[in-house]
Image (cartoon, rainbow, N blue to C red; front, side, top):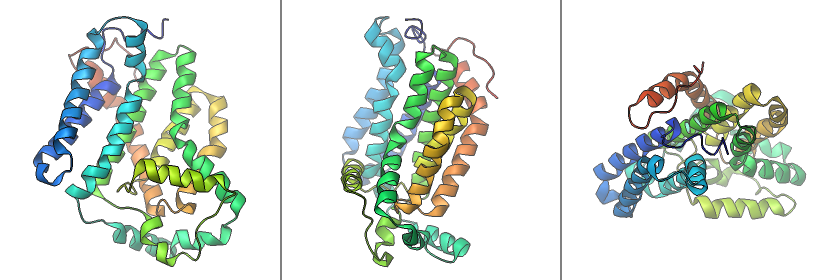
Length: 301
């Protein structure tokens, strides 16, 4: 129960960062209102999220409210990602894939996704598609491990890191809108990827859930996986050793499965480094902010 009561009457740094992101997207929608499909709906949802987060600390001290304080950001992040399908392309209608393709060619002299056909094998494809899909669970598992051990200061900081990481990558999609090589370089591929049967079902499921996103650069899969590995190394060595294989495979899968250009992976690593180096200062600033400030925490550096 001590873990559940950690956030009673308080708004955590991750919640404050989420409010800031909602305000940024609200501003983008309002200034581009005629272009954004369902603009009014999204405006109302963002206002509701902001109101919910501000009111949450004072909603009561029951178990349900405490669970909401701890885990509310999971559905919010998923919503924020899903809405990008309706916003990014309408705000930035010109995709920049051609620039990313040129960078990859300048570095490697080939299209990496086409070259990787040499490694194609149904077993490898099946494994990498499973690993790629596990992305959605890797940071959550570390958060649960910290929560179950009642290490709430580490849990709080890691939650902020993941929220911060997701939101800077989402904003990156506005700067460099791109749909990725599975669409732009499909005409150069000699054959579609085949697994043992389950991989195709996972691909179809992901395509259905995500729609066509302009989310190639930076690679969020790379960024969030590296952030999870970095903090697993600090907080939970056993989990980190597991992630060494899974995380490395996942990052490789982003190019092998034709979701990303190599420059997207490099960009994802750069974004992860940016988050790691800037997060300590931003975390302290957000905790210092006067509304519902958290109790004093350790210096994260």
